[in-house]
Length: 110
Image 1 (cartoon, rainbow, N blue to C red):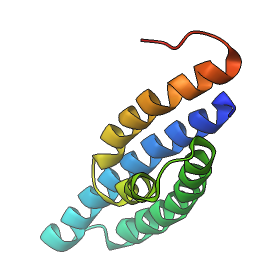
Image 2: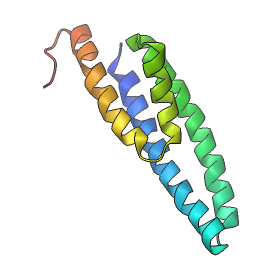
Image 3: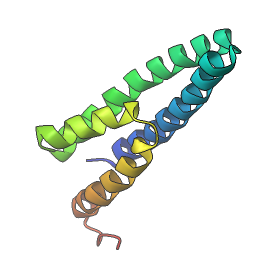
């Protein structure tokens, strides 16, 4: 497995998580204060597109890392739970880095 597979997953995990937090803030303004309906629509559409890209990259990483179905499902769903993607991303990096180190012949980072 190439390191770029993990890098693009990490980038999309952060982008998706941040966009979900922005979407939550927009929803609070839309439904709590009756402000920003147009912005909420744009952010929700953008988050949806970015989440689809996240799903593709996470699925690709899961297939190459040979994750069991339950773990893959949890990683895929974490993009829909505010702040979960931040924590799941950290765990994924810890799990995948030894695979990257083993493939390149370098010792794993501790």
